[in-house]
Image (cartoon, rainbow, N blue to C red; front, side, top):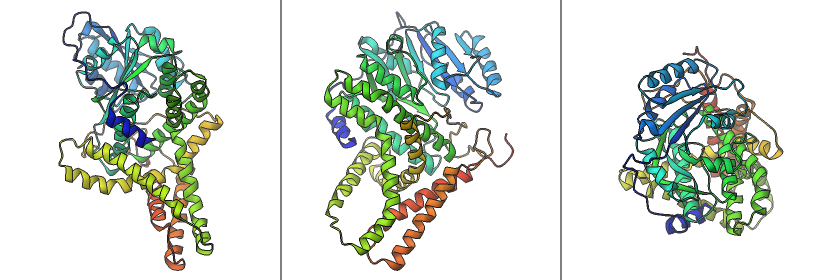
Length: 473
């Protein structure tokens, strides 16, 4: 399906339109509410607010609502920063709830009665939109069917570590081939939870924010599109943000995204297939919502590959069918190459970018395999309806190589059972590698097992290394 989206991306047909001119005059500009949902973000909340007030938009045409569900010193830090900008003439408020019900979705829902804007811009705590953000996104609402404008995520700390580079590799695929491919091909796509603007009428018409899934953004996106609203994706407008710099934060983010995707699929697929939209859209939407299920397949194939190597040693089998898997790897490589080399070279030489990609892509595949147990659990919980808390991804104001998250508040403090299992699985594949080297003549799975060993081992190692074992600062 990614290959099909790459085709749409290249064709740039369907909904794809040329960029409109930014709003330059201040006359008759729409009033905008900027919502900043935060929860215990003491390291980045000041940076967030300082950035938002720099938006190139008249002070009397926007308001800022810091939807603060925090339970720690973030509350006081936010209060002081809000007071500072109120004294400078900004329309900014700290909105707090007595009961933190529904997590982020609940905060957005409960913040709506306070919002005066016809348009709602939403930014998570780690996002730093450029000053021209509103002037470049709002013109697309001239089309009365446009309900959402979503921008591409950029990465403040992409070069911080191997972990952040690998995350950027995956996200750049999503925000080039996938999102713009869906937009260009007139498929169902999504608001990504932040870095975008909603028409208020669209939120109300689609039923508002609901907290019955962990991906409230994906859920509302689909409900809005089934109501006839359109989502515009702007690949050329970036919204810089901080990538998780430590393993346990990344795992909590992955768990929320994969489980929430499964929950949304369970909730929305019956409605999609009952709707009058085109069959092509239904198929693409189904694959989109169920995409996290790929981790179940990866995990099962990984586990079963070990006994299979003994079967292949004793029972001759026709392996000609394996070309299908090779084709899949080639197709995936092409998609990732395009998104990370062809489309996003960032002024670097082609050769340098290509060499980096050739090194990073196998490492990315290995890390993805290593996350398969963790994400399989998330997907299964989503499908069976097991409810879990919304665990937000902590951010630590990591901007460059000099910054550190060591011993910071919000780091995990104990080893989870999944981390222990990841360590055991790493040993499982190490034993399989040794057996193949010493006792088995044909070794069809040895490269696969090496990648699994490295993937599960790395996930386990860094999950333990990134624990907070010292005094908090």
